[in-house]
Length: 322
Image (tube, rainbow, N blue to C red):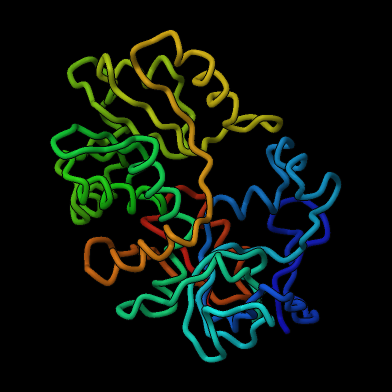
């Protein structure tokens, strides 16, 4: 099969389109014929091996243990392990796996769900990782409730577009922080207001928010807290930073400071839960949330797709078609 493979950590130059053997199907695994795969910031981190702390998490110290990139997947079931009971050959599925930038990918049964009936494969592939993160940030960490004022920083990205929609679904008054050219998109998915970060500072002291969801930012805790209500909740979702710790240093400082203030300062490390994937499927089929796709790229152009993702101009999610 054809796949995007890397042997060492590095820039997009380390990625190659190669012919490799299909993955081996374990007893609890599902082999998926990939039709589309989502692209998110996690793919870049795994490609580069940055921050270095990531390598200590079992991904490989000197080189990636799994050389095929890609996390989100949507496609048809090609084969199932002998202990798999929820899927059969021919089923259309979506979910998360390691190595979806390939013609075939192997996923654990509990990381897949039936594809939403009202989405095509490209749309379905845009959902899992980003929507997992958004749902757990809004519902579990932020505990967003009706009537609250919620600020979403990075509202136009892959995670941000789901976060805005989910916060609105929970009944919040949502303000999205984005650039000038993305304000129309953020309003179209439900934001009550937008703040153009190129022109104004959301922490200028004129507004306070019950919940702030900071997605992949690098603003200081002190800056974020100036916009947070006295008993509000800050949820740090990912982050960018140095080569060693990346954005995790903010998470550590938030954890240490939170017990000494009325404000709740929380970090999120999202989990791939089957029950959450099933819930997202139901919300999509009910028309309560929908994926936003910026553009699609063929498998052979994954390096170009990653370059576009890192440019900062993406509106929603980038998807790879296989």
